[in-house]
Length: 238
Image 1 (cartoon, rainbow, N blue to C red):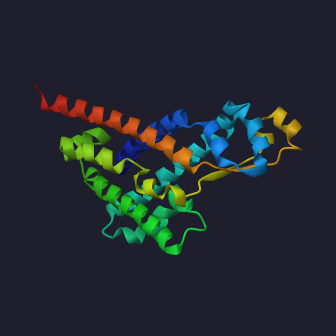
Image 2: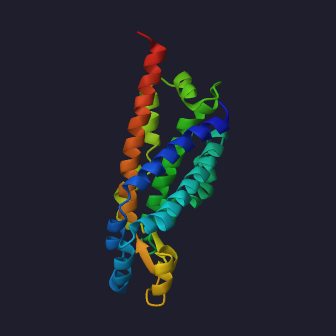
Image 3: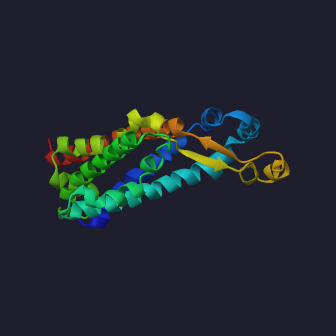
C-alpha cells in the first residue's frame, strides 16, 4: 500500500471527526465557561450571534487542528517507515500536537513531561499499527486493512489508535486550549460599531473542545466499525 493511500484513509477519518466535532461544539457553553471578569459583557454580545462565532472562530480553529493532526500523522508515518525509535521523531510529532502545545504554563515540569510522554506513546502506537498497512499491496485503505489484519485486529486499530483524545482524558485540567476573539471581526458591521467599547477577549474552551471531539470520535469510530463488519462479512461469505 502506498503511503499516500494510508494518509488518505486517515485524512478521511480526521475530516469526518472534525465535521462531527463542529456539529457537537456548543458555542454558548464555551463562551459562558471560558471567560471571566470584565469579558462578560462581550460574551453577551457574542451570544447574540453564535452562528457568526461558529463561522469565524470555531470553524477556523477546527481546520487548524485538522492541519496539525495531519502534519503530525506525516511525522508518525516517517517513524513507521524507519528503523529508528519514536524518540528520534519526538520533536516533530509533539510540535504539531495541539494538546502538547496547550499544556498550561503553571504545570510542574515533571507533570508536563508525563503528559508529553503519554502523547508520544500514543504516536508510537499509531505508527506501529500503521506499519503493516504500508507493506500491503493494495492502494485502498480498507482493502489494505482487510488484507493485512483480521477483523478483531482491524477493530482494535480503529478503537484504540483512531481516538485522538484518549491520552489527555485524565489531563484536561492541565491544558488550556484558548483563542482570542475580536468582537469587531466576528460580528461584522455591528461589531465595528461596538468595537470601540468591546475589547478583545481570551476564551479558554478546553473542556468544550475535548467534549465535542470525544463525541465526534465515538460516532466516527462506530461508523468505521460498521464498515469493517460490512467488508469482512462480504469477503468471508455465507
